[in-house]
Length: 114
Image (tube, rainbow, N blue to C red; front, side, top):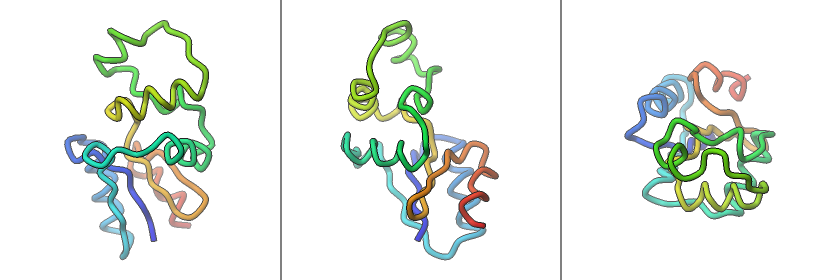
């Protein structure tokens, strides 16, 4: 089973979901905007991605530019900020077992399908 952490309003996230639909039979779609993830869930996703929280933050979002840019937080604080503001999380995140990839571009997802 492949999971995709998806924001349906995001063009890149929709492209990742379309890629999965073309290549995978069973997909679990997690709309993390409507159904927010917890700090623990995000921490596990980051571990599977092998990324630090700051690497998965959308710095082009207005909230980041106006409220967070230039501020210093530790990893746990960044995770809390991301959970409280899920639009800041880069998407889509695609998970298979103990591995995950950031599906932008959608071709990155191919790594998990090998």
